[in-house]
Image (cartoon, rainbow, N blue to C red; front, side, top):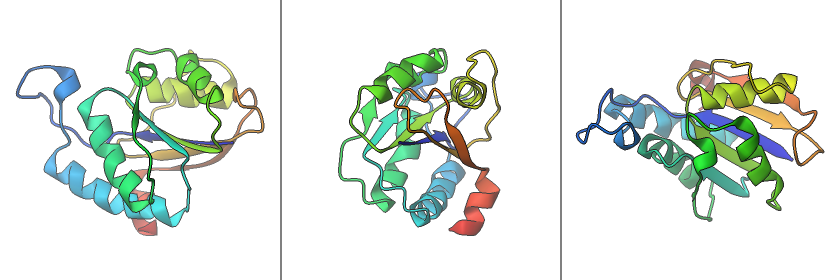
Length: 162
């Protein structure tokens, strides 16, 4: 099973509502995600599922990836990808799915703690991910007990692939 982690792209500092959940991608964040989506598609991920945080900027990051990758399902919103969520929560959700390739789109510090959990087995280690960075893990264990890091691609490297 493959698990891809994608941190949301550049977002506005504050939303018009003042709510963190309503922060949108900036214009440059949107443009960058269009280019990065093409780069991600060049990796031929063939996603069976795309899970996103309930925050707007995560959905806006995932949408161009889903479109360019030819994903024909619905984006699945989950509280297990909120910044304050425990990494094991989303891994339990993924384990319950019958998928071979899943994209998770979320935020720091959660996505970094999830990265740390996948690398070390400990959920208290945060591996910082740049905005719009992509990491891929592979495991034969549906609970990702001993996954292998396949790659970590910061956005500047992804851009060269697009």
